[in-house]
Length: 597
Image (cartoon, rainbow, N blue to C red; front, side):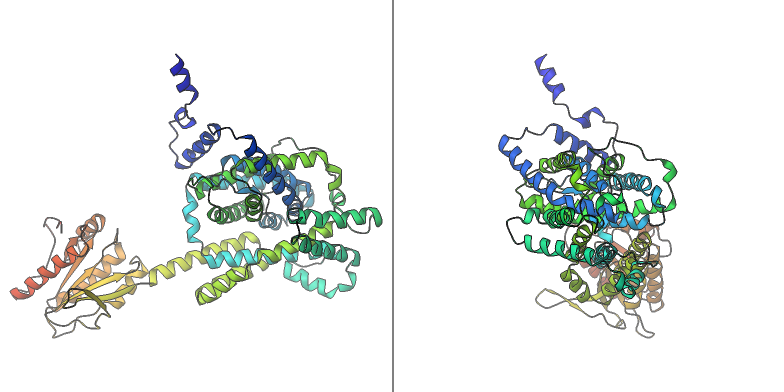
């Protein structure tokens, strides 16, 4: 009886729902199992994780409030996001030290996506967008699409994130100057601002400058953990006591509710094309940033991290955040770095970060109302400048004109076009770059055995010699356009040069494809015109079946073995024997058993 109770108590969640076989759900089951069956932390660990969580909560408050401004809503919603995001993310994320809270990029994308939504409907539309973005991210995780992030080129990501950083800076010019410029995009608004410098508020500009200076100076002191918080608190306090009303404060944007919100389902009447496409854009930004954070922070216990698993965790965090009236959340590099520096050694610090934010919000809700808006704007401008990585830009520049062009196009699109469209352009450019590079990066070399037995690679001949075996090795992808590139590289037979033999080594190709079939068929026909032969070696099982199913091909093929070069040597022996027979009978695999060599 005791043994049965013990066994029941330790049964895992995945054993209770064995009918669910979706890979991503298995990861989610494992996350819940690991959290439920974890060892209770020691008091020392709780103190350590609690302090790290408090550091993250304090350091993230200014960014969270500024995120609300970027999203075009009350800054309090940024704080709500920093309650639910770290708690849910800390429980489910496979990257134990990653902090999932509000980041400026996600807030900016959300705000840009909702620019066409009337101000009275923006809050409801935003919360619905956050939930939809979370659903998208969860689906990406369940479908194991983490591997798809590798198809978004580094140059496109650099161009997009650099554009986001510049947009972040430009978006706060109206906040720090006290003048609301007109224009259809940020560039036009900057031009309008430069034409109306006489309308700039000196008080607002001075407040923003003071916040910037304090943030910079305090970063180099022992107060660096709270540098951002003090940078907005000190100017706000001075203005509140000395010159109240001289600059815009948070309470001017709307009432600051007391306590934390209760969960509520946003109205589906707020659903629109802008909300839907904006949610997809936010989800893409979340997973791209989260993948970068996940890859840069190993787990202290050495356990495996899963990008797809973290997609699901970030999606779940956004779904819960949307119900609790928060702006989008995702893996934050700055908060994660602060978490590590503060001594965190596990996921508990993330949970503490959310709880501490809730405590601060409950205990000091009135202070938030007096925060000066220009101070928040100045902080965001500093974040924007810090987000631009010159080393990444230099790397892209030196990578060649393909990378420079794709980064420049994505950067320009991000500044001028809606974020959703700019992201779409970036994804399309990444796809085109991948297809272009992979399909044209094809090489062909001739393999020649030297007297000492070593194999030398040489440039292939332009024309095939008569009564000679030419062994060729192919590098690169040979699908679609790659097959046509290979066709242009193959040495051609000449009239009067009889009986040339070509051995084409295709080791490592799982499939050949219809285009490659056409290339091989045409090439073998050209060889037969001068009584030549074509041999294929190093074929996998599937590629061998492709060859057998290609009725147009009349050639000999050899399956790859575990011994490197064995099938090619076998073909070379057969080809030399055929040349010695002086027969012109064309080769054919039709009806013959599969060669095991």
